[in-house]
Image (cartoon, rainbow, N blue to C red):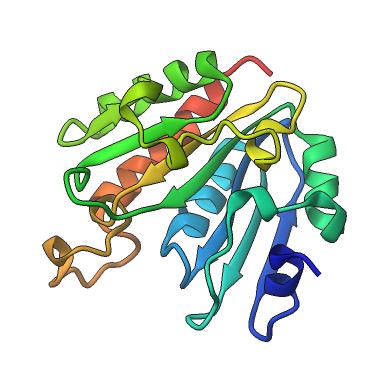
Length: 199
């Protein structure tokens, strides 16, 4: 059994698929695995009328590579990838030197430039990196088996540092309601980019 299939079978895992428009948002490392990524993807999809596929994992879930996320092991993922034309996949990462960097990988570089323009306008305190040579190789999202590249128009993956996901010490006293302000701006920018993209 693949690592993705094993992850889906674990107790407490919640898999969701909402088919709407042909622009898609995806977050298969959501829940406690890469915190807030599923909330960002689902919220942006709802605001823009886009489709959504996500998996929320419990805190004891081991990490699994994106290249193991196989549509053959999920009817929901298979339906999602059949439905959408392009996709934006949300990931979380934390790495020294990148705490205020959003890394935009994936093969659809036109979509990368389009979405990044919205992100830069909404989040001026962050650097939005689209130059693939400046993104660590393992975070570029270019592999054939990465599901971000499987829709007809391909897609992009955005690696989000802890601060923009509301999980850094910067937000220790945030009591809500809702996500921290940077996360809200991120969601709004992604939704605006989805609405403006000609699918």
